[in-house]
Image 1: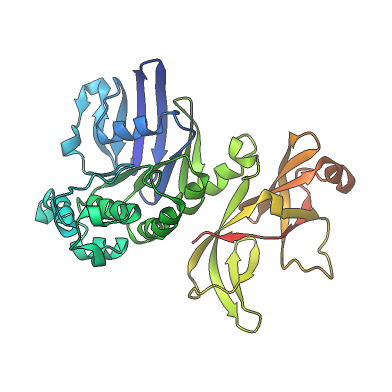
Image 2: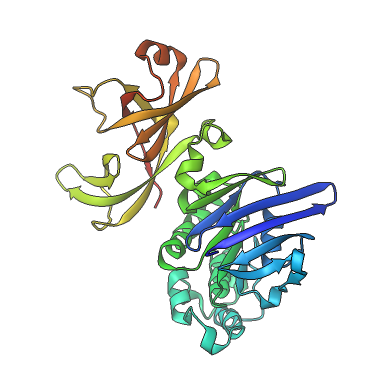
Length: 358
């Protein structure tokens, strides 16, 4: 198999882990779920730091673990990079020396990530001569990620790398993680319980609950599935992938294309054809049976209703399909009845607001 195919079954005290998932060979796969659901245990099994007595792990067709054949590749033989919650840099070494330590672990003939490239991707060039004690939390974590990259891993594992950072430091480091997402072919498996990180970084989502995988698949699909918890609550939202089509200098607007039509947002300093990701909250989407005249809402899309479910008394979550891009809308049960909304109906989604994520 191309990609990562894993199943780990083990007991950790009273906790039972029985998790199976597949991750694509490129992009960011996020293990997502509440604290204590087994995400970090899965990551440690991937790294070989834990050995599940029942399980297997195959990465790009190569067996790293196969308990039926008593095969287990120890951690030091697995071509992985591991970024922990804490940076764990050597305090007596400069940033440059910390990075060179990671690079020296790999024979020169096997190095796939150049020193200068890792330094540039993580923006650590101004930090090379400093010691870790002179770095901020976000800077230390960027150095830790660069060091992991310089081991030229075939799989990059990241265990809640932003959890120890304050909000400002998280905002500073997320663009660098997005750069890894777009500029590198190394697959990343990323543990998080923060929906903001998931929305910005994930391509593939593995939703965990009580030691098991409840669902897995593309981010846009899982965030809008009505049988999963992500589609409910105040944070319920859809993620749209779009490209920059043009800029309107007169009205300071930027136009984005996605399969469901053209999106208008305030002017963004982005090149034409740049890829962007947007989040649309269910609370910001209303439905009408026909396009409205004399409205200030610029983003209106023809959509089909895929499904409806009651979120709480009087409130309904509606799943929508905009030419293959899923959206969510939260409307009242009275609106459902008055408009005769039902699966299969063609309606128009009016989007009052959306957030550019990158």
